[in-house]
Length: 139
Image 1 (cartoon, rainbow, N blue to C red):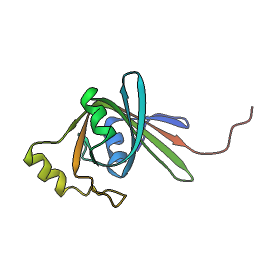
Image 2: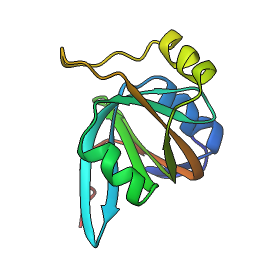
Image 3: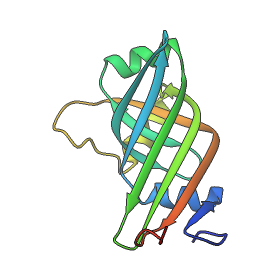
Image 4: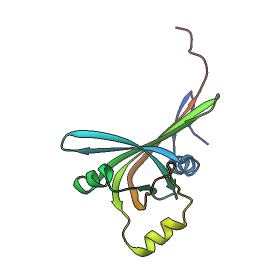
């Protein structure tokens, strides 16, 4: 999947989306009034945007003040690891056709709480890294 040589490889945008499509957990970073917040979220990536569910509260409130966000997801095995970062904008999904589409997605909350508001993160940039895991080299 990754290209380049060496233990750290840059991922193409298509490779980043492939990893995101296979994961369900990410972290969302927001900044309001000079304060930074980061939230674990469950996600669904469709190759163009990332969708998450939430309840009314801090995330939605902060997004109305500043819709610029960063989203990071990663994963690993014994042999390798990866990390993908999206920088973009987030907006609450409000049109019924988009809500119906979001309802049909496989996105489910992890915690048994009502999270009936959808937020879509639309990337301005996407980048990622792939890491080969092995022992530390000799110094």
